[in-house]
Amino acid sequence: MQIRQIREEDIPVCAQLANDLPLGKTYGFTKDKWIQKLQRACTEKENLLFIAEEEGRLAAFAWVHTHGAFLAAPYLRFIAVDPSFQGRGVGTLLLKEFEEQTRYLKKDWFLLVSEFNIGAQQFYEKHGYQRVGALPDFAKEGIAEVIMVKKHEGRN
Ligand SMILES: CC(C)(COP(=O)(O)OP(=O)(O)OC[C@H]1O[C@@H](n2cnc3c(N)ncnc32)[C@H](O)[C@@H]1OP(=O)(O)O)[C@@H](O)C(=O)NCCC(=O)NCCS
Image 1 (cartoon, rainbow, N blue to C red):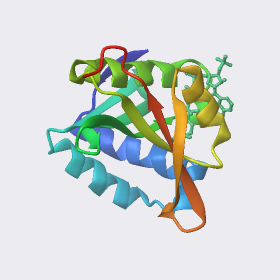
Image 2: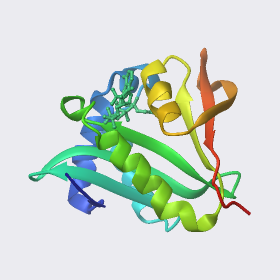
Image 3: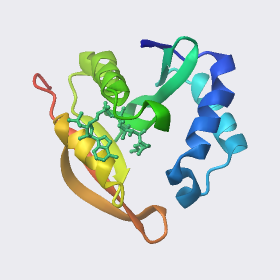
Image 4: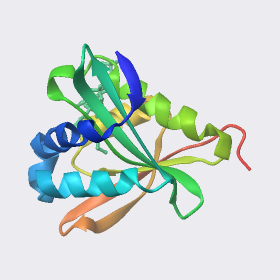
């Protein structure tokens, strides 16, 4: 498994992956909206986008905003592993990449996860993230987003 920065040609494949997730239907994603969001993100220097690939096949991608939490701390905006690669450690590799690439900021790591996405919450807890609150109706009416934070051991 190789991790590298996203390239222009990866964007439609990432958009397809995001769109095909069960989450996509809940939040009303479309592939075109994803393509636009990812293209725009690639032009802004606070965004880090990286992918995991195996033998040229996209396994997963992650989208990070270096100051996305309160203009101060790193925020994992999205992570998605292709269902055929889930449970093989790919999500763990990308989560580590998020933390390593933003460790220099010396700030805690933040993310949001849907309240119903218990599997993902367990995954983050396993990696040291703790639930600190919830935002009702934040991304979609009727669904709360759980706020999860991991402490930076040497934070400012
Ligand atoms: C959540 C996600 C990123 C995890 O990535 P992954 O590559 O499947 O996870 P890994 O193989 O690195 O880690 C697996 C561990 O996480 C936990 N885990 C991951 N997905 C889980 C699930 N759906 N249910 C329960 N536990 C899960 C398991 O406890 C597992 O631990 P084990 O190895 O001791 O069995 C991935 O499953 C995914 O993309 N899911 C769909 C999209 C999504 O929910 N994204 C998160 C949005 S906030």
